[in-house]
Image (cartoon, rainbow, N blue to C red; front, side, top):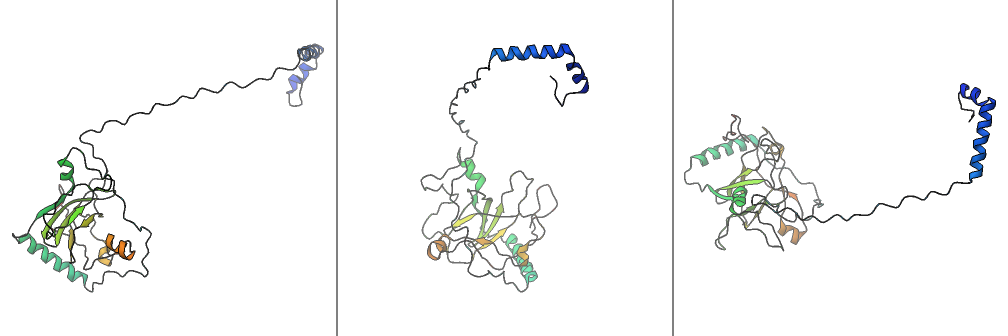
Length: 261
Protein backbone atom coordinates (compact mmCIF):
# COMPACT_ATOMS: atom_id res chain seq x y z
CA UNK A 1 0.00 0.00 0.00
CA UNK A 2 2.73 2.42 0.86
CA UNK A 3 5.15 3.21 -1.95
CA UNK A 4 7.86 5.84 -2.32
CA UNK A 5 5.74 7.49 -5.04
CA UNK A 6 2.57 7.62 -2.93
CA UNK A 7 1.21 10.98 -1.77
CA UNK A 8 1.94 12.14 1.76
CA UNK A 9 -1.64 11.69 2.97
CA UNK A 10 -1.57 8.02 1.86
CA UNK A 11 1.68 7.44 3.76
CA UNK A 12 0.12 8.81 6.94
CA UNK A 13 -3.00 6.67 6.54
CA UNK A 14 -1.07 3.48 5.79
CA UNK A 15 1.27 4.01 8.74
CA UNK A 16 -1.65 3.63 11.18
CA UNK A 17 -1.79 0.23 13.05
CA UNK A 18 -5.18 -0.68 11.55
CA UNK A 19 -3.97 -0.18 8.00
CA UNK A 20 -0.85 -2.30 8.61
CA UNK A 21 -2.91 -5.17 10.07
CA UNK A 22 -5.33 -5.02 7.11
CA UNK A 23 -2.48 -5.15 4.61
CA UNK A 24 -0.86 -8.14 6.38
CA UNK A 25 -4.16 -10.02 6.35
CA UNK A 26 -4.70 -9.47 2.64
CA UNK A 27 -1.13 -10.50 1.88
CA UNK A 28 -1.55 -13.75 3.82
CA UNK A 29 -4.73 -14.64 1.93
CA UNK A 30 -2.99 -14.06 -1.43
CA UNK A 31 -0.07 -16.33 -0.44
CA UNK A 32 -2.47 -19.05 0.71
CA UNK A 33 -4.33 -18.97 -2.56
CA UNK A 34 -1.22 -19.79 -4.54
CA UNK A 35 -0.16 -18.58 -7.97
CA UNK A 36 -2.88 -17.76 -10.47
CA UNK A 37 -3.30 -20.25 -13.32
CA UNK A 38 -1.87 -19.09 -16.67
CA UNK A 39 -4.36 -17.29 -18.86
CA UNK A 40 -4.55 -18.75 -22.35
CA UNK A 41 -5.19 -16.36 -25.24
CA UNK A 42 -8.63 -16.43 -26.84
CA UNK A 43 -9.03 -18.52 -29.99
CA UNK A 44 -8.55 -16.69 -33.28
CA UNK A 45 -11.54 -15.37 -35.12
CA UNK A 46 -12.87 -17.58 -37.91
CA UNK A 47 -11.71 -16.76 -41.44
CA UNK A 48 -14.49 -15.88 -43.81
CA UNK A 49 -14.08 -16.24 -47.57
CA UNK A 50 -15.58 -13.37 -49.51
CA UNK A 51 -17.69 -14.48 -52.42
CA UNK A 52 -16.41 -13.42 -55.81
CA UNK A 53 -18.74 -10.82 -57.18
CA UNK A 54 -19.61 -10.87 -60.82
CA UNK A 55 -18.81 -7.63 -62.64
CA UNK A 56 -21.87 -5.55 -63.42
CA UNK A 57 -23.22 -5.94 -66.94
CA UNK A 58 -21.92 -3.41 -69.44
CA UNK A 59 -24.60 -1.05 -70.56
CA UNK A 60 -25.08 -0.15 -74.18
CA UNK A 61 -23.68 3.36 -73.73
CA UNK A 62 -20.49 2.27 -71.93
CA UNK A 63 -17.32 2.66 -73.99
CA UNK A 64 -14.63 0.04 -73.39
CA UNK A 65 -11.07 1.37 -73.69
CA UNK A 66 -9.15 0.03 -76.64
CA UNK A 67 -6.38 -2.42 -75.75
CA UNK A 68 -3.47 -1.24 -77.86
CA UNK A 69 0.20 -1.77 -77.16
CA UNK A 70 2.32 1.33 -76.73
CA UNK A 71 5.03 1.88 -79.34
CA UNK A 72 8.29 0.20 -78.46
CA UNK A 73 11.72 1.62 -77.65
CA UNK A 74 10.52 4.26 -75.13
CA UNK A 75 14.08 4.68 -73.80
CA UNK A 76 15.69 5.22 -77.20
CA UNK A 77 18.22 8.08 -77.20
CA UNK A 78 19.36 9.54 -80.54
CA UNK A 79 23.11 9.16 -81.10
CA UNK A 80 23.52 12.94 -81.49
CA UNK A 81 21.45 16.02 -80.51
CA UNK A 82 18.51 16.57 -82.83
CA UNK A 83 18.46 19.92 -84.66
CA UNK A 84 15.69 22.47 -84.35
CA UNK A 85 13.43 23.35 -87.24
CA UNK A 86 15.70 25.41 -89.47
CA UNK A 87 13.46 28.31 -90.52
CA UNK A 88 15.33 31.54 -91.32
CA UNK A 89 12.24 33.79 -91.40
CA UNK A 90 9.37 32.33 -89.39
CA UNK A 91 7.33 35.54 -89.58
CA UNK A 92 7.33 35.29 -93.36
CA UNK A 93 6.39 31.61 -93.09
CA UNK A 94 3.42 32.45 -90.86
CA UNK A 95 2.24 35.12 -93.27
CA UNK A 96 2.45 32.75 -96.22
CA UNK A 97 0.49 30.14 -94.27
CA UNK A 98 -2.23 32.67 -93.53
CA UNK A 99 -2.48 33.55 -97.22
CA UNK A 100 -2.78 29.88 -98.09
CA UNK A 101 -5.54 29.53 -95.50
CA UNK A 102 -7.49 32.38 -97.13
CA UNK A 103 -7.13 30.84 -100.58
CA UNK A 104 -8.15 27.43 -99.27
CA UNK A 105 -11.29 28.86 -97.62
CA UNK A 106 -12.29 30.50 -100.89
CA UNK A 107 -11.56 27.42 -102.97
CA UNK A 108 -14.81 25.56 -103.57
CA UNK A 109 -12.98 22.62 -105.14
CA UNK A 110 -11.33 21.57 -101.90
CA UNK A 111 -12.10 18.01 -100.87
CA UNK A 112 -13.32 18.80 -97.30
CA UNK A 113 -13.87 15.11 -96.60
CA UNK A 114 -14.08 13.74 -93.06
CA UNK A 115 -11.81 10.70 -92.95
CA UNK A 116 -11.79 10.22 -89.15
CA UNK A 117 -14.30 10.96 -86.39
CA UNK A 118 -13.92 9.16 -83.07
CA UNK A 119 -17.35 10.20 -81.79
CA UNK A 120 -19.06 8.79 -84.87
CA UNK A 121 -17.10 5.57 -84.47
CA UNK A 122 -18.55 5.15 -80.99
CA UNK A 123 -22.03 5.97 -82.23
CA UNK A 124 -21.90 3.33 -84.97
CA UNK A 125 -22.03 0.46 -82.51
CA UNK A 126 -23.29 -0.16 -78.98
CA UNK A 127 -19.75 -0.68 -77.70
CA UNK A 128 -16.42 0.56 -78.89
CA UNK A 129 -14.53 -2.35 -80.39
CA UNK A 130 -11.72 -3.83 -78.35
CA UNK A 131 -8.61 -5.24 -79.93
CA UNK A 132 -8.38 -8.96 -79.14
CA UNK A 133 -5.96 -11.60 -80.37
CA UNK A 134 -4.07 -9.00 -82.38
CA UNK A 135 -7.09 -8.06 -84.51
CA UNK A 136 -7.38 -4.25 -84.72
CA UNK A 137 -10.80 -2.57 -84.62
CA UNK A 138 -12.49 -1.44 -87.78
CA UNK A 139 -11.15 1.95 -88.94
CA UNK A 140 -13.32 4.94 -89.75
CA UNK A 141 -12.23 4.94 -93.39
CA UNK A 142 -11.94 1.71 -95.40
CA UNK A 143 -9.38 1.57 -98.20
CA UNK A 144 -11.08 0.87 -101.49
CA UNK A 145 -8.08 -0.42 -103.47
CA UNK A 146 -4.28 -0.70 -103.43
CA UNK A 147 -4.05 2.62 -105.26
CA UNK A 148 -6.11 4.40 -102.59
CA UNK A 149 -3.63 6.70 -100.82
CA UNK A 150 -6.05 8.01 -98.19
CA UNK A 151 -4.27 7.72 -94.82
CA UNK A 152 -5.89 5.85 -91.95
CA UNK A 153 -5.94 7.89 -88.73
CA UNK A 154 -6.50 6.38 -85.31
CA UNK A 155 -6.57 7.61 -81.70
CA UNK A 156 -8.61 4.97 -79.86
CA UNK A 157 -5.76 4.06 -77.58
CA UNK A 158 -4.42 5.27 -74.24
CA UNK A 159 -3.83 9.05 -74.27
CA UNK A 160 -5.01 9.37 -77.88
CA UNK A 161 -6.87 12.67 -78.28
CA UNK A 162 -7.70 13.04 -81.97
CA UNK A 163 -11.33 14.08 -82.45
CA UNK A 164 -11.71 14.56 -86.20
CA UNK A 165 -9.66 14.71 -89.40
CA UNK A 166 -10.78 16.57 -92.52
CA UNK A 167 -8.94 15.97 -95.78
CA UNK A 168 -8.45 19.26 -97.63
CA UNK A 169 -6.17 18.12 -100.43
CA UNK A 170 -4.52 14.83 -101.31
CA UNK A 171 -1.77 15.39 -98.72
CA UNK A 172 -3.18 18.20 -96.55
CA UNK A 173 -5.37 17.62 -93.51
CA UNK A 174 -7.11 19.63 -90.80
CA UNK A 175 -6.94 17.99 -87.38
CA UNK A 176 -9.23 18.73 -84.44
CA UNK A 177 -8.02 17.64 -81.00
CA UNK A 178 -10.35 16.31 -78.33
CA UNK A 179 -10.44 18.39 -75.11
CA UNK A 180 -8.81 17.04 -71.97
CA UNK A 181 -11.11 15.21 -69.54
CA UNK A 182 -12.56 17.28 -66.69
CA UNK A 183 -11.74 20.57 -68.37
CA UNK A 184 -13.89 23.24 -69.98
CA UNK A 185 -12.22 22.61 -73.34
CA UNK A 186 -8.44 22.58 -72.89
CA UNK A 187 -6.64 21.52 -76.09
CA UNK A 188 -2.90 22.11 -76.47
CA UNK A 189 -1.31 18.78 -77.41
CA UNK A 190 -1.89 15.89 -79.81
CA UNK A 191 -1.30 12.14 -79.98
CA UNK A 192 -2.53 9.95 -82.84
CA UNK A 193 -1.37 7.32 -85.31
CA UNK A 194 -1.40 7.26 -89.09
CA UNK A 195 -1.05 4.41 -91.59
CA UNK A 196 -1.40 3.71 -95.33
CA UNK A 197 1.07 6.49 -96.06
CA UNK A 198 3.13 7.23 -99.17
CA UNK A 199 6.58 8.66 -99.66
CA UNK A 200 5.39 12.25 -99.84
CA UNK A 201 5.26 15.47 -97.83
CA UNK A 202 2.16 15.62 -95.61
CA UNK A 203 0.79 18.86 -94.19
CA UNK A 204 -1.16 18.85 -90.92
CA UNK A 205 -3.17 21.86 -89.70
CA UNK A 206 -4.14 21.55 -86.02
CA UNK A 207 -6.85 24.16 -85.77
CA UNK A 208 -8.27 24.22 -82.21
CA UNK A 209 -5.43 25.05 -79.82
CA UNK A 210 -5.86 27.72 -77.14
CA UNK A 211 -2.53 29.27 -76.16
CA UNK A 212 -1.50 32.43 -78.07
CA UNK A 213 2.09 31.22 -78.54
CA UNK A 214 4.10 28.00 -78.56
CA UNK A 215 7.70 26.78 -78.56
CA UNK A 216 6.99 25.50 -82.06
CA UNK A 217 7.75 29.07 -83.12
CA UNK A 218 11.18 28.74 -81.49
CA UNK A 219 12.14 25.71 -83.55
CA UNK A 220 10.66 22.81 -81.59
CA UNK A 221 9.57 19.85 -83.71
CA UNK A 222 6.94 17.21 -82.84
CA UNK A 223 7.90 13.70 -81.78
CA UNK A 224 7.37 10.92 -84.31
CA UNK A 225 7.63 7.15 -84.20
CA UNK A 226 7.90 4.86 -87.23
CA UNK A 227 7.29 1.14 -86.88
CA UNK A 228 9.28 0.55 -90.06
CA UNK A 229 12.32 2.47 -88.77
CA UNK A 230 12.02 0.70 -85.43
CA UNK A 231 11.96 -2.73 -87.05
CA UNK A 232 14.69 -2.15 -89.66
CA UNK A 233 16.95 0.45 -88.02
CA UNK A 234 16.24 0.17 -84.30
CA UNK A 235 15.11 3.81 -84.13
CA UNK A 236 12.55 4.94 -81.54
CA UNK A 237 10.93 8.32 -80.95
CA UNK A 238 12.64 11.17 -82.83
CA UNK A 239 11.90 14.78 -83.70
CA UNK A 240 10.56 15.30 -87.21
CA UNK A 241 8.92 17.75 -89.58
CA UNK A 242 9.91 21.10 -91.07
CA UNK A 243 8.33 24.50 -91.85
CA UNK A 244 6.52 24.34 -88.49
CA UNK A 245 4.72 27.43 -87.24
CA UNK A 246 2.06 28.39 -84.70
CA UNK A 247 -0.33 31.27 -85.33
CA UNK A 248 -3.89 32.51 -84.87
CA UNK A 249 -6.46 31.23 -87.36
CA UNK A 250 -9.88 32.54 -88.38
CA UNK A 251 -11.95 30.04 -86.40
CA UNK A 252 -13.82 31.45 -83.38
CA UNK A 253 -14.43 29.49 -80.21
CA UNK A 254 -18.00 28.44 -79.48
CA UNK A 255 -19.65 30.97 -77.20
CA UNK A 256 -16.47 33.03 -77.07
CA UNK A 257 -15.10 35.81 -79.23
CA UNK A 258 -11.54 34.54 -78.81
CA UNK A 259 -10.02 32.67 -81.77
CA UNK A 260 -8.23 29.35 -81.99
CA UNK A 261 -4.57 28.83 -82.92
